[in-house]
Image (tube, rainbow, N blue to C red):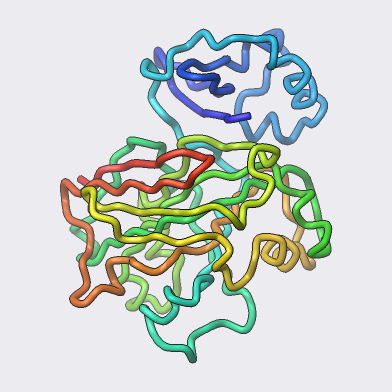
Length: 286
């Protein structure tokens, strides 16, 4: 299934994409029982099972062209993100000595989340070095703690696309990642969450990032230094992962900071990130 969160007629909702139309979540439940968000639904497996059993016989009623995209999912906690998880990206930003021996984890404020086609603020008053990072994000489907690598993928609900927008100069100034990666509008996510049954082997996925139509990033998920199952297992050690948690898995080489000379984002630029099997996340900088 392909889940979408959207706004139509001033009302926030979510549902399943079928072709060029959406089955609104309200089609499956009485008003008093209807989940309010995708996060709410993932946290109630019995309601999710009800939808799985019903959705094949249903048709979409809301044209996709008539809606405004919202962030595909808003987790209860901040977005978890893995840094330096592609070897070539590590090298473009430093040297082989910077290749991590253990997973590097930081968070992005969930307040930074932005939907497909939403506008990324340039934030010219605080940064001169706004950069893009196209990534695959994993959405957790059930509560787990201390999960093994072999069992980790059972905890996955699905996958989406995330742009880990980063103010590089703030990253240097503050000597940590949070502020540089949590500016308003610095975490576009979407346009959909695709359930894991449609992507049986995420390591075969390919991710491409274009800026104004120019290809900047082109990587495959089998290039991850720490694969998805390892990431989930490591994050769950003594730390409970909850339904709806979002984990960004890292970005391939080709970011603006790594170019010579660096090429940061400017007002009017359009960043387009495509992952086969999920879709295309596109946002303009203003």
